[in-house]
Length: 410
Image (cartoon, rainbow, N blue to C red; front, side):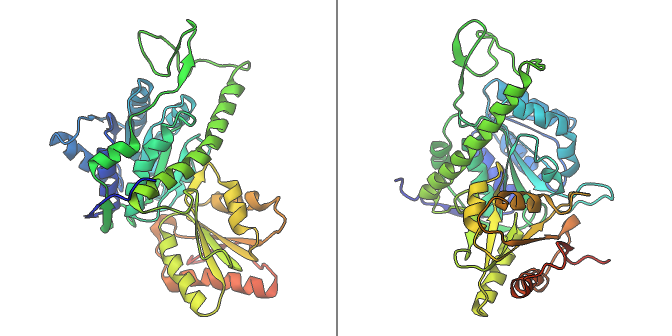
């Protein structure tokens, strides 16, 4: 067991925390294009480059599509790569997200989650990354700036694991986290370097019969992302799914290893439970809202209500077993979605949680609240209504409305 390391407390917003973590991870290539509320990440990192604090090749591209393409190309040569984006920028990357995951390039990307147009909105919800849930990227969402810093350090170790070799998104709520100053405990450069390590490459068999590292190398030529028609394409996709399943164990392992040196863990890395063990009702959410919901759980506990909270930290791969173990014995579950699945009868997280619990022995009553679109704020008093609805259902046994909209003018 490693000894917990001495740390320095710094005042950082979420974007600055991400930039510092990337700096400490000794990244070879950063390619990016600015977009609010992500811009501070690459602005700050460009300062590190200009000041000679890192030896990273910083590429200012003409678009987000080019940024992710440059990262893919760099990762394919064996480089450690990073980018950041949000909203329309992530949407512009859409094509290359699939190419990146299909090429098994472990690019790390921070997303300062933001609403999508139209109408134009620059504030935070999860519409952008939830729209990419089937693009083959691991997705982790953080609660605060501290976790943003910690998760970037973990992300390189997860993505570059040879049993995973997949790209990863770390999502932090736009403005709520990206621009809010917090105390962040940071590890030394030496400790981060030791924890993250150097990028390891899987070995593959080439057409020449050689076993070599999986990278573009003139001395050992190979093709990445070749044409694969009916006779091979399916097998490539199945391998990606196997890598996603491998990632579940790796995320848990990395979370545990990080806790030993930092003193911080985030549940088991997949889900973070708060007073859920004896709970009768619980709320499930993603991202920064969980901080406020924990306070409401505390208040309800003082009033004798057995309330709990489960934060879904890892959305892809979906931690089905962890969800089952945490939620199966509850009476009522309220799932909160900060995005919409138009015409889908509920939000993305709601769909996934119901799916995970469908084959369980017990069937808790599950409802969905869509909230916070376009960065709409909700007071603790308003968020408490979500628990109160769960209490009503637990008492009456009746669901009057499966899907509701919190704080919406109708």
